[in-house]
Length: 478
Image (cartoon, rainbow, N blue to C red; front, side, top):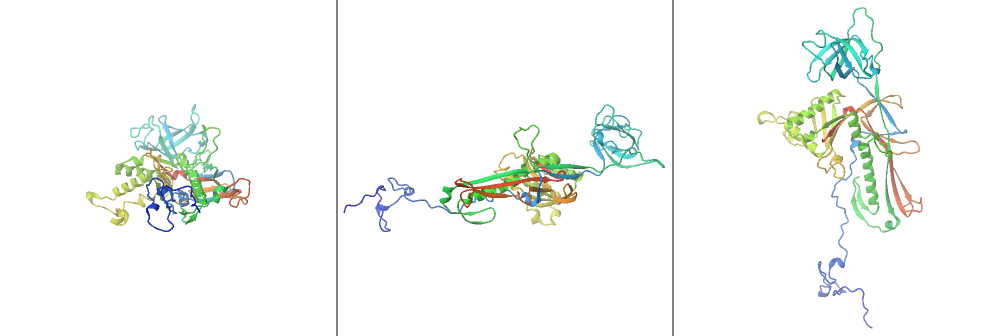
């Protein structure tokens, strides 16, 4: 019988029926004429993924500093207390006995006759203690009103010791009152405690993963380790798991970066939501250029100014610093410089005289003045796929007060305590929209349509409540 020709042929290679080292069955990695190894066999495949970016998830910030609570409405409304004492910073001296406050007419009567006030010049530190003779409307000046005052220590506001002639941006505050014997109360109305009301609206966040029916039939196994701590073998659902992880990051990123629709925005832009950064810029404190300072004295001076500003706000003792890499290192350098004593010596008072702790230079907590600070790197500001990886970042970090705030709940009708940061999500007895996921299509156990694919849908509806934003600090790069 004639030999049967085999097609296709493999050049000059003749396979051996046994494992023998013959010239005719030799393969070369770079060989020609059909002897190339890659043309004959599949390469060796590593089953395990290489985690070259480490843990890629960015969420976790709000789990550290806040909480999540359900709500049923399209809007969350809360009220925050105003200051207890009466003071104004937009005051000008218009005559020898007159001070003008640039405020709306509705506040007339807050400062009344026979109340005692301190008039201060912030630029020079000069001050006068005065008694208010009368509170009158300022003629021809809408929204302002005038105080007729008499200093205790000199005849007028234009004295030889202190002269407030033409001064603007003066500050006044009430420290008491003084009435003559047998006199009646000259106040027209009492001081009614006021509050400021804020609100925010949730946004709907969605994502989807799709795999067609044909691809689900071609199963390929990959050994994986996920950011959630699990490991093992997955096939096409590996991509679905990563879609879920990315969506969970979006849930946090959306309420941190969220922006309300502005007056000049296009009509097609949706309403938006007020995120953490926007709330601090609008109602909190912003420090610019700290990371650009190189001298330790300048860094410490700027940081001390932050403390002085906190004194004027809630003066919350414990605070958390979430920083990018540059600012975290700047804080370390600043603290390392503080630990150096006089004449080359070193004082470790802040660290219980522990040289090892002081010279670690990776400070995680410190106390300055009457405040405790706990410092940590915020991966969201360092990750190259988000705010990290740029030469000039716009945000270097954020200071978040620890603890809770007392607010008036409009729904419950009572004062309640809440974390300064917390997420509100839509939920009812019939539908919980904190984190929804469902399958559609005709593949993978879903039989809802004729689509030859499996769609994994994700949805959430939520917003962030930033209470007491005056106690937060945003560190801007420039």
